[in-house]
Amino acid sequence: MTNNSNRLPSLPSVPRVHALYNCACGCGSTTQKLFTPGHDAKLKGIIMRVVRGVMSLDDVRTWADGFGRGEQTVKAVKAAMASKELMKRWNIVIPTEEKKVG
Image (cartoon, rainbow, N blue to C red; front, top):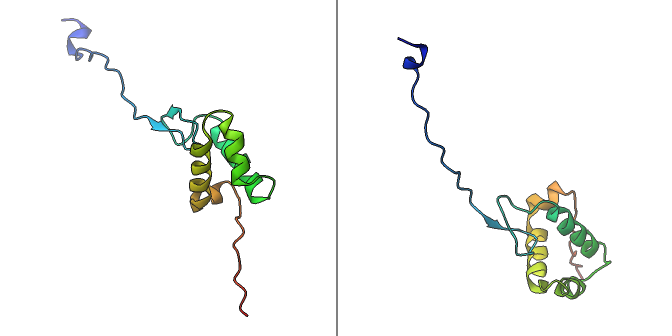
């Protein structure tokens, strides 16, 4: 009797199936996570420009139209700005309009 007789036969390898999602930045690429690598930084940069008044959403649309993704990018910016989790993670404070009592 040899030592190999106590071992189970090895299982055949099976390829793993990973779910694919659309990148949350609006670029249209697919990824296994929320963002394609580096795209979270690009979206964060766009949001910071919008919050600080450097760009408007129309400017973002015009800029992203150069890549053919204007509406998708604006939609992604709005969704990310509405996400308290992302804004907290990125340490971005979105100013709220205070209503003046007359």
